[in-house]
Image (cartoon, rainbow, N blue to C red; front, side, top):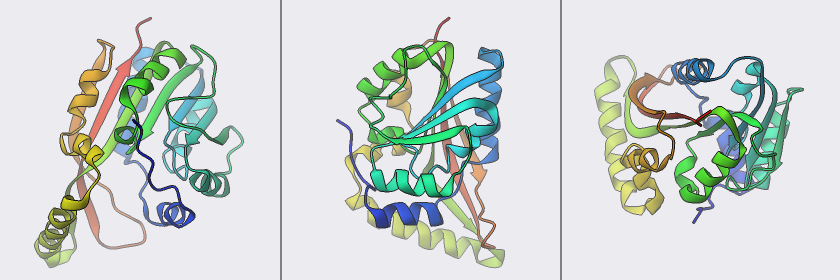
Length: 225
């Protein structure tokens, strides 16, 4: 069963203000994999659980058309206000019911979102909409994080880990997918051509001197041709 969180207007506003965009290393990894599997030009990309469009807009330069969907009307409203690209549209829709034709999608992505979905239903829908040779990319940052700021890095990281450990007692059960680094989700992907990456990446905001380093997990897979 899909888990519905972050749907209110206040949540959506905070997402748009504070959440960081996908790291460049992840973007490069996804598009390199796609280039290996499909020839250009690329017609359609779909970003499921798109939130306010931070992960959707990176797709725009590579595709003729981009669709971002999210179950939250407030998130989609934020996305429409924040991302104004001529080839990118946003719709309210569950990830398990993508409003596109069969075998029409070159790439489907989900950034820090797939663990909230009904995995079995989502993968069935992904198989319906991907073209032969089309790709999926599920990726997220984990809670294995370090904070770096001058000589205070060790103290900041220690404080962060203490807060994280305390809050873990109250987290949603779906977060176990993140804690196990998407291993179960990876195993559920029905395609034989699939890869799982784990790496530490720097995700720093241009608005702060504090650097955030965190472990990311990336799942890539290609539908058989």
